[in-house]
Image (cartoon, rainbow, N blue to C red; front, side):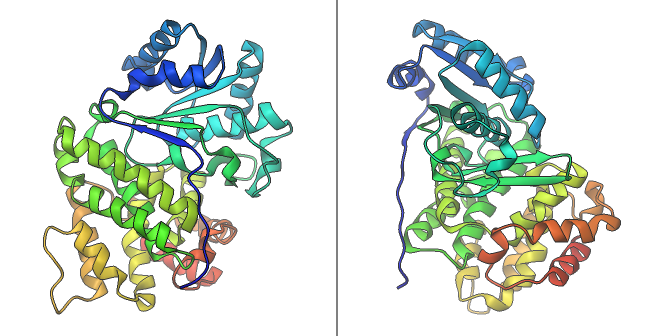
Length: 381
């Protein structure tokens, strides 16, 4: 067995109705002025007001920054940091999916350590803890509430920069499954597939450990057994609990095992063509599973048994898993190709060059050159 290390440097609160514990967590942050980072859709759904009311009941003054877009930009981070400073905030609440959480982590860096967010691109460049951050997910997808990553789009380079540091893991993760029961079916599908891919890539990663494997396996068990029910009926409380907890376990898994070519290649797709992250991942997944099949050491069978409604037979081959994934994506009405999502071929050399900059390439089970990545994009196109 190879050497490995891990820690879980935060407190996770999980359960239906657990949002009511937010005032206690804010008091434990010792902050009486908090910036809420979220988006306009959650404002329309009334969740922003619920958070504001809870803060007020706790005697905490709250200001909201709600202009977070999908694939959030460097400029959005700068505006949110200015809002934090202008309000005199001393802590942050991130409410939403991965985008508000990515922005909140980046803001936490800037208001604590200064500079430009591009200075922190890469691994372990954040010099110390960020300001107290409470992360409240409203999708079962990114797992960002427990990860050490922030992904921000730099439009000047058409590039999604990644910040990797355990200093940016939120202090508290507050997971209330009742908050994801109003998701539209397409969002439930794309974010749920994203969460499953997090666990799958962490499980196949070349730097996986017994700890990350345990997290990934539990995530795939929970998500694989519930994703169809949850997409069919978001009011299914048992399925919602399984999806949200599975997404969290998947986040812990890839925080310590990294990901692979799916995520390395999906980030440029989103940066150049603004394809939603979960959709880009889903389209690329079967193509990259086919590519990685020659490196399989028996784990494809495990993954199949988690996601399929039937167990693998004696005649199982990696292609059986690929076919199962393609059938699932069809059931969820996810585009079957990058071109169907608006991607065109002329950007492939640029996207491949950007994908090769990702540390996830090095964790992929099959080694990849830039020519391999270009061919994979063409296959997915």
